[in-house]
Length: 548
Ligand code: FBP
Image 1: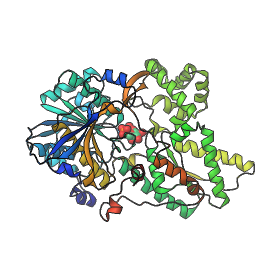
Image 2: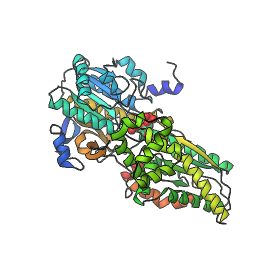
Image 3: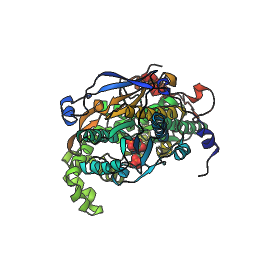
Image 4: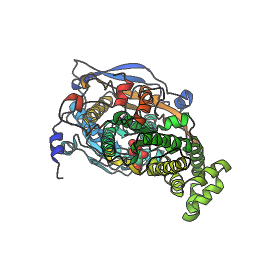
């Protein structure tokens, strides 16, 4: 593989870790835990892994001799910068325990475990991938690991390779399934521990013990860099409004973090749209009013940030999606048999009158995307819905109406962008390089401590890395019951933007001045070499959440 100059220089970077992890550690147990909601139901479904205590690793002077262990690792779901460092940290952690320990990577996601596709990750291979973006060391995939048959098939290869612990690096859905797997292996006494690691650029896998999911920091910095560049371009030419959709699935954490970094003219937060029960027309009117206001000052340009999940949060759309989910869960086979050209009419015929009307009002592309494009977990693939185009077009129409009514005098030309995939495999920032390596190393410590059904947790990350706190949190603690595919299921609760949280409050307090004034900030590219205040800053979200 031909390497860039940055790749070569970056390979030499030594990720920083919590101080405790540099020597021998012992486990300090916290109080017993319970799930965030629906305690009785979750407890019943996880009799072997429910209620376990949180764990913190603290330094000890005792030298611990540990036996060699074979460990498996899986990368699951969408890519997020830093995944390679989780694996590097895990590798170094188990080797530090005992040099004869071995690490096996299952290929192309959870499917690799079921299909027995794997490769041993040796020191040479790991060294090639330290501090690099991407998941290409073993690949990733979205196969849903959920049936007993899959678990048993996986166990065959784990037994064959003498693997005693499996680390699943994934988002909320993958870690939910990791927990179901941990419970099952414990119930049947399989002798395999299962540990999760919190991954996703979306930033929606977080709670009091998991400060952030890895990859969020780097992805937001990449998007903020390019939004900043666009803002400087539009402040120079002064002729375009840029409608920028940002990845992030349901939650608006990415849009909010980018807004905090770049100070755009408008940023929509889906969670607020839902709370205020805004309709699509309300959103369009709000944006058009900002465009008109800026036009009064001769500013016919600006930026609008749009979270990709917006459509799901508009109350009327939410009701429609939920009915579609239930309908498709029970009629997928019949739906598949309907000729392509008749599918939309078929759906419309089977919806309630209210939802059929909304469905009919959508551009056919959007209606099709809502109906057809689901991932294996049943999520609407919001990345594929072109909300930025929909909004730009609707704002244009609204402004034309306002002009006709004498309420707007400016010029409006729109450019649309979608930033998503370009941020998911970026070279991890120092924060993600350090955080991920520490998560992997902590996973190794959880394995050594004999734990299963835990997620690796590294906290206090707005402080210098030496003060970070490494530990583990039982996955059942994050669970509640939710309706999926028409059935109630135990799942990790998604963390959406909190409207009373410090990041949103800061944004809400400043958005009016950002809307009318041109207060753009240009963050520039991620820096790896230079002063700490340029290279080591965590996200603004995290700093505001932690009051730093
Ligand atoms: P994960 O939740 O698996 O981390 O995926 C993150 C994400 O990038 C979302 O932001 C986006 O909606 C989705 O993946 C896109 O999925 P795909 O890569 O399958 O197109």
